Every structure is written in C-alpha cells, then in structure tokens.
Length: 156
Image 1 (tube, helix red, strand yellow):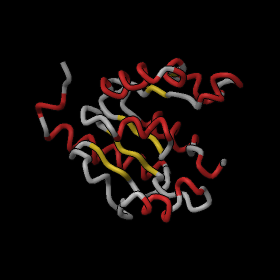
Image 2 (cartoon, one colour):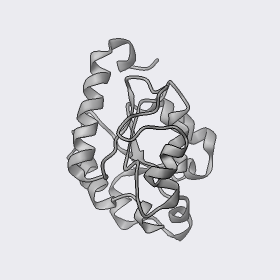
Image 3 (cartoon, one colour):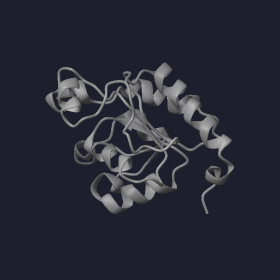
Image 4 (cartoon, one colour):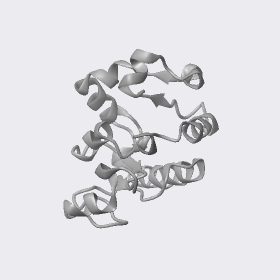
C-alpha cells in the first residue's frame, strides 16, 4: 500500500533543516528496508535499524527522544499507548488505504480532526499529509509545548 508510505523527501529535508547543535534526528527504517537496503538518502543520518525489529528498543527510543514524529502506522501506534512518549503522528487519514480511511478510524469512535481522547498535551494526531511544511510546523508547535513545560523539557 504505497499510499501509506512516508514522504521521504519531506522527512529528509526537514531533518536537514534542523539545528545540528540542538537536535539529532534518528530514523527508524521500515522493516523491509533493513533487509532490502536503506535508502541512500538516509546515509547522512543516524539510523536505528534494530528498533525496526525490537519493540522494546523502539519503545525505549520513543521514551527517551525529545520528540517523536511519524505517520499513521502500526509501529507509531506504540507511542500512542505510552503517556511518557512525546509524539505527533501525521497523515492520520489515507483514503486509499482501508486501515487508514476515515470510516475505519471513526469505527473505533475517534473523531476526525482530533487527537486520541487520552492523549496528553505533548501528544497529538495531525490530520495533514507529511509535507515538509507540515512536519516543520508540527515540530515547532510541539517543541513550543515541551519548552513551556519545564518539568518535561529534560528527562532524567
């Protein structure tokens, strides 16, 4: 279901735009890419392939990361279930994908345009595609919330 894939050029452009003195983007590749070979564009970044295969490692990374950004996929869904994870999930709805269609999402009682009812202020669903502009805007919004909550800015 390629329509459900990440917009890799947008994610890479976003990662390149980050202030390297403040942020270190870490990519967790698709499990298939750990076998078939990583996209060449990711070679300049930290890639944590092991987290694609090991749920405990993935969750540990999610918990320790300053912020987690991704699209609506099963592995990103792990973040939704942990109140200690700061995340934004983009591309919640993909009409061409049955498991990400609005009807499917609403069948679970979730409302279009809203985050999960149990999400914290540092957790959100973003009902827009993962364009570079949306990723950047989302990161800035979530970073602003994190920095406004001193007790959550730095994890011990």
